[in-house]
Image 1: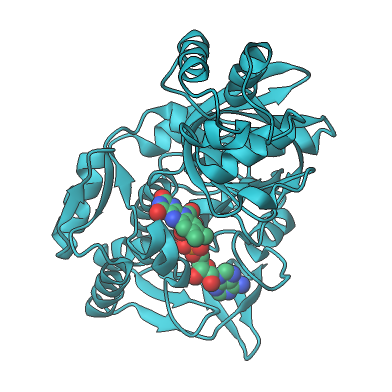
Image 2: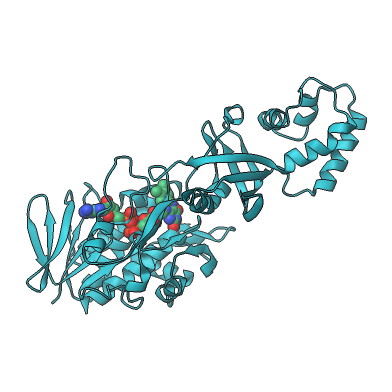
Length: 402
Ligand SMILES: Cc1cc2nc3c(=O)[nH]c(=O)nc-3n(C[C@H](O)[C@H](O)[C@H](O)COP(=O)(O)OP(=O)(O)OC[C@H]3O[C@@H](n4cnc5c(N)ncnc54)[C@H](O)[C@@H]3O)c2cc1C
């Protein structure tokens, strides 16, 4: 019977523990928090978006996408849904293809995973922060504050520092480094953006936009969806999706702008036509009031400020083009992202080139395994990060028990 240690009782650690125990391993699950799956509880706004019916590779990001493809092989959305059904959780897919537990509660997922671990005899060691993992006489020494433990195999499932409020080191990456693994620099992704300009006047408004990421006056990527205007800058699903590209270029010290099309479902010509028609009809309104007829009041103010137009003048044909352009290209220079403490995931991590995608085992150190976000994989919003955590955790758990 293999003695296995799993470091981290999050998404991938919990399923790995289940699979390793099912295969007959003696499993100890180390968790630094006082309960398992703390981050999982916060996922999907407390509802846990466990996977997505559309799992194309384009939704994942890594320096080694071919290995991501290998890891996901055999574990598609249907397999994921079947897996949770087998644990006792019904899954529903929404119109946008995102899948959630039918209870719409992340705690259902956490509690069923813990229950299954316990049923299978997994020893869960809470409040047990692992400080380091070392090789010692053909075994692995796992050291916590209290004592050292010895195991045949170790899985690093420590996730990332995304959303952790205190400054802390990423122990998963430290352990990987100490065993000679290559680490791709990590950076915050799925994160809010801080604008150089103060846009507090629009704070609280949620508006469907087309979001362009602009570098050197070139649009490098576009995203469609909700944008939330905040006191510090921009948030919302479309911004979180855009944030990866923004961070990539900011890290290269390149200037990055976000261009918002406030009327993504109307062409510029159609918008111009609408503005012209309104101008002829509504001669007595102030520019601000006139614009409020088609745009949220706070956004109307923001657009007029950006275009440096006096909100009290009457609309006139000279400014129609300027307004149509301004509404379709409301552009903000980005200062920075809000960083790891606000992010949903960290991009980068342990290089997949040094991991066997069939077992999640290290190609450098026999008996050492990695799963989940500690690896150099991150996904878009929509269940992709959890899907990768389940897929890699299940593979690692099965393999380490062999
Ligand atoms: C607010 C928020 C919402 C999200 N929503 C979604 C969503 O809806 N869908 C989606 O796909 N993804 C979502 N994500 C991302 C997703 O939660 C992660 O990608 C996923 O949990 C990663 O799984 P993991 O097992 O690698 O790490 P985690 O689930 O983070 O688990 C790692 C565990 O290791 C423990 N640990 C760390 N260091 C040590 C140590 N030294 N000793 C012992 N234990 C340690 C941690 O405490 C943690 O419990 C969200 C993330 C956040 C922050």
